[in-house]
Image 1 (cartoon, rainbow, N blue to C red):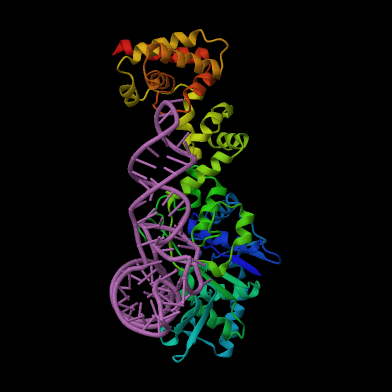
Image 2 (image 1 turned 135 degrees about the vertical axis):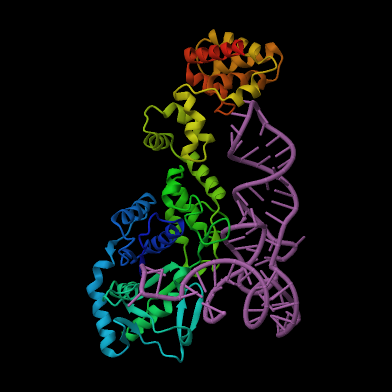
Length: 419
RNA sequence: GCCUCCAUCGUCUAGUGGCCUAGGACGCCGCCCUCUCACGGCGGAAACAGGGGUUCGACUCCCCUUGGAGGUACCA
């Protein structure tokens, strides 16, 4: 089995394209199977080196490797011209205004055999004699694809359903050349939340955007694999090997799927929490360009869904943050200043400084004042973090250290007297 | 317009004629846990588009309608 992924370099790799790449990759993991990456760059206008690099970048990030390529379709022009000449010679094609058209009989039909959809019949009277070469001699997409897949020995063409309508044309070219078409499998399209074909309008529709938003490649891979088929009625989390073992083209769904960012987020959270702390720390330090994040990561990991959740949640552990006025107004009332005062006094004499002693000291304050726990803990939280949201309060105070904690509480107490 | 594809909870899916008073997951609602936010646990609402057939029996097979999508370039 030989499959291929043949993106046209129009910019960022869409998750639809990523899913197509993944399914091909899964197929290529089997015995005697390989994947060829071919860039469909015959449209010079949009085929820039930058665009090509974007596609490769996205594939590498997703850890989808290939066995052959990347090949440039444009560079195969001599082979394409050879095929055009042969078609002209046999009379299967003819010149028209300088361009070359394939002769399509008025009668009959061309049948496309698709693994996912079965036989699909296209009546010839609905297909015109289509152009296979421009008047300047350059080959067109349908010809280039058919010839490339043939020459490269591609056995299974697995691509998006948007290519289905073009398939009979490719089959006709192959047959005119006396060749057998490959096996086809047209995957259902991926739609945005509005049910329309995925486009740049649908934020987070590209792999690079997902990356920037703090998603993990392994989570993205797992999630997009699920858009189009079930791998096991009992579970949804799989390693790539497990996905490859269970994947079957025959079982791929026929209907379009809508990309659900919420579910991806959930998947990402699951993967994130299972990451080794060192691993997560390394990824975050690369993302933020900072060092020494390990202590903060240890506290924040269980509350993160994406990598970008880290900074808002744990920045206060790394450096002082501005006070969020809303957080202040919400918490610093009803005797909060008195409670904070008591908490400060207790923390000032905790010995030795550590998680257990800090917790005991703060809980003792709660008991002594006979108030609800949150009446002490929330003011402390806001004082040290500037926010009502943070990792566990005892862990946070312990990690911050006595000196820094007391200074921040003092700043908060000053703020009381200023207002 | 013409051609083609598709149709199970809001979403992703399981279901391949009786196992279905339709299962799971995300999301949503309620409760629990609880120092906030998450996580986690428990429970709940939520679907076979409609109409004809076929069959002893249809979510599953066929047809029509409706709805959605893709294509229809000297783009890919």
